[in-house]
Figure 1 (cartoon, one colour):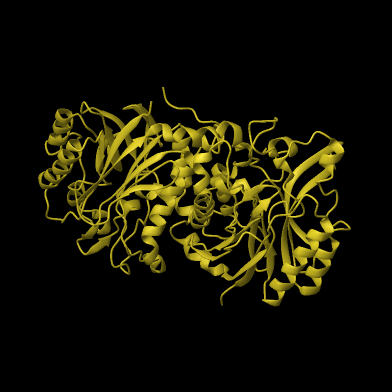
Figure 2 (tube, rainbow over the protein chains, first blue to last red):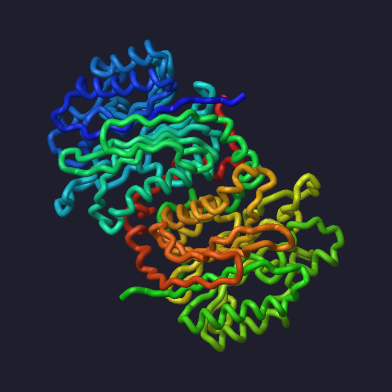
Length: 311
Length: 311
C-alpha cells in the first residue's frame, strides 16, 4: 500500500518592511485553508516567513534588531496558525527568526519548526550553514548579514518519525551543502522540508546571477537523488524592499525529478501527492548506504574545514 | 592571465569481447592524434578502456579472469600510447583493470592513471565505490560483479598539482557519491577526470532506465558546482556484447554547466578549452570552505555507514 503524504509548498511573495506579523499570518492562513481544502497533509512555508528578510540591512540598534525576532512560538501573533492547523488537521513547517534566552544570555537563530496535525511542535532546527558576512560591507548594494545576526545552529540536522514517514529539516544555504543532505539521509529521511530567501543578484559573484534558478534546483535535485528522499523547497520570492529574490519553489521526488513547481514570484501554492515508498528502491539499491558507503575514505570531510591543495 | 587547459573527452563505442588490446590501442591512438591536432593538453579515456566490461559476466576460471587484467603499465600492448603521448606532447587519463602482486598475494583493482606530457605516470587511483554484487545472481539479464572481481581501492581520492592546475581522479560509481567529490574538493581540485561504463538498464531498479542520462549528469554537475571544479566525464557507450551502455560523455564547468557533450554512442571526441581560474570565484565565495563549512556537524558521515532511522 503506498504511503502517500500530500505536500503543499506555500511560496510567499515579498513581505514589505511595513507589514505586521498579523498581516503576514493572514496571508499564511489563506494559503493554509487553500492547501487543506485541496487535501494537503502538510503545508511548507519559507525561511523567515513572518517578516521582511532583515539580514539584507545593517542594523546597529539592538532593540530594532530584536524586533525582527520571535521570543515565543507560538506567540500572540502566530497562535492563529496553530489553532487553524489543529482545526483543519493539517501539519505545517514554518521558518522564523528565534530569540532565545539560554545559557544566561540572549541567543539568536535562524530557525524552522515542524508542527503536526494536532498543532504540536514536533521538530525544531536551527540553521547551521549561515551564508554571507559579519561586518558592514558598504560596497554591496545590499548586505547579507546572517553571520552577524545569527549564531550557528546547535541542534544538528535531525529527522523525526511523524505523519507516516521520516521527515527532516534544513534551511536555505544548507541546501547547497551535500553534507547536510547526507546527515539527513543517514537518518533514513524520506521527506526534507526547507525554505529559502535567495536574491537574484549575488554581489560577490554577479556572473552567476543568470544561473540562480539552475543552481537552486541542481543542488536540491542532487540532494534528493543521492539520498533517495523527497523534498519540499519553498522560496520567499519577488521584489522585497528593492531586492529581487528568486522563486522556483518546488517539490522534488527521490529520483531527483521536479514534480511540481511555482512559476510566479508571489504567494502561490503548488502541491503533490508524495508516495514515501518511492524512496525505497533508491535506499535499497543504488544508495544502499550499508552496502556501498566507505567511511574509512571520508575522513577528510570532518578532519579538514578549508581546502588544502597539494604542494 | 587565464589558465587554459584544453581537455578532450574520448568516448569509446563498444569493445567486443574478441577485440585484442592491440586493436583497442589503435582506436585510442586515432583519438589521441585527433585530439593533439586540435590542441588538446589532455585526452581522457573511459573506465576499463582496454577491454569489454567483463564484470557483466560470471567468470569462474581464474586464468580467464586474469586475462582481463593488466599486470604492468605500460605493457607491451599499451606502450605505444605512452610513446605517442610523449611524441605529441599530450597528457592522458586511462582506466584499466589492474592485477598487482602486493602484500604477498594477487590483488585486483579497477584503476585509473594520469600521464603527463612526457609520458610519465604522475597519478594513480583505485576505485573505492564498487557497485553491484559479489555473488552470482542468475535472475539478472547480466551481472554487475565489481564487488567480486575488485578489491576496494586503497589509495584514497587524491589530487596532484600538474599541467598548470590541481587535478584529481575518480571512477564511474564514485561520481554518484558526494563524499568522493568533497574529498577532492578539499584538496583544491580544479579538474576531475572520470570514466564510466553504465548500462542503460538497471535490473535492480528498472524504473530508472529512462532516467540514466539525467542521473548521470545530475550527479556530476552537482559535484562540480558544490566544489567549484571542472570535470571531464567519459563513457564507454553503445551496445557491447548485447548490453546497451549510456553515452553522454561531457565536460562540465565549475558552474555545473555542461560545455561540451558527445551525442552518439560510438568513438567520439568532444573538447573544451577550460579556464582553471573559472574555479576561483566559487572556491572563494559561495564555496569558501574555510569560511562556511561546519565539520563539527558532519560527524555522522564518518561515524555511520548505513542509515539508522529514528525510533
